[in-house]
Length: 197
Image 1: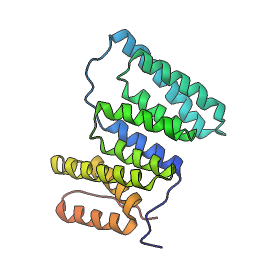
Image 2 (image 1 turned 60 degrees about the horizontal axis):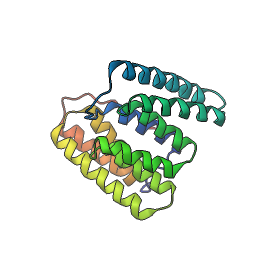
Image 3 (image 1 turned 45 degrees about the horizontal axis):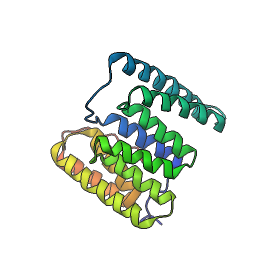
Image 4 (image 1 turned 90 degrees about the vertical axis):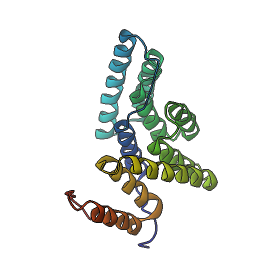
């Protein structure tokens, strides 16, 4: 069983990947006027607060519809608001609306087709849809993009953490430990705290 990939609850995976996606900047051009951007961000902030409360409370699914409505309005105000798309992706996933999530991921990938975390998440969604061929295609694309990003930014702790999470999920705990050990050997000057549990 030790060689089997980690299987973590979908909710935790969704949250983790969405936070990883937020950390990675997208090159988005054609920004809207400041007023529209401010309105979009205010709506996104409101939706984000409701989403946090959803996770902390009894998780009333009716709240997800309200959150989704706010996020749709935020995107209408500023179609380049990556945070609104990211939160909308989380809501669609929580609602098990996987086909809509795939369509949204396609839109998000139009901002940056090489976004490793989004490619990984698209693979996860296809896994939930029980489509092993598409799952593997997007896991492979994510793997390639992580490799390319690590060549460009070998000292990025966030990127290394993202990569280790990806490896643990897709290839298992032992492979992730091997990658971590290689990183430690290559970067003995970095202080790494490891929590094994």
